[in-house]
Image (cartoon, rainbow, N blue to C red; front, top):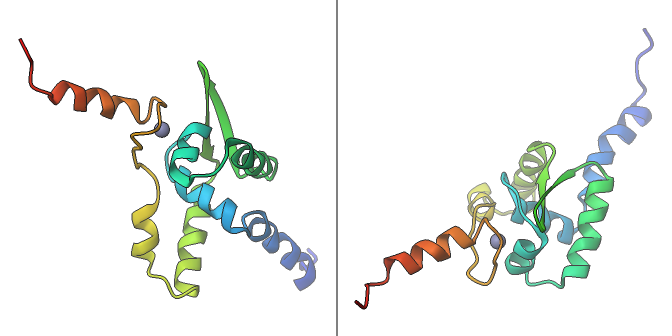
Length: 134
Ligand SMILES: [Zn+2]
């Protein structure tokens, strides 16, 4: 069997790096993390306009990094392969950040301004904690 040449191998290896090589895409991957997120959730997490986020989500989906799932009026995005988060964590050490700093902001945050099902159960439990008036 013929050995794969370095240039051919390099092209393959560059593909996943190129697909996530922008601060915006890395931000979206960090905000989605190991779970799922809808666009409204990403809006709350990143503070960007929905159209801007959708544009990047579409590119990440096209690059086969994200998959989506519709549930009612929400479309949820998740990483097809969690290894992209490992790749970002490896980049943390190369950029002089600690992996802990980066892994601390990955995923599972709940935003009061977001009404997605991921965030709303917490709002309900907060309401339930209020003392009864009667
Ligand atoms: Zn949310």
